[in-house]
Image (cartoon, rainbow, N blue to C red; front, side, top):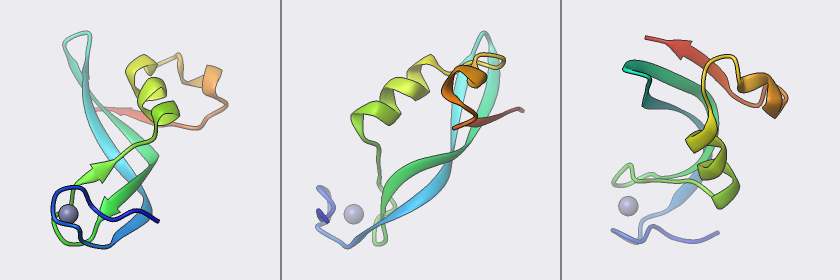
Length: 73
Ligand SMILES: [Zn+2]
């Protein structure tokens, strides 16, 4: 496992919630796999996850096999 690029702290794999703006609405994408720094809280996402998050919109989630749960907020 890598260490944090910012503070070189220990990182841990976690599922996190990510807030995004879509179509003027704020959405929350739940259960996103990330690597989180335990010291500074910096989140790292792999390329596949970043791509999925860029594409994710309500109703489109099924294309990803329910990998994301999206909540409008
Ligand atoms: Zn850190």
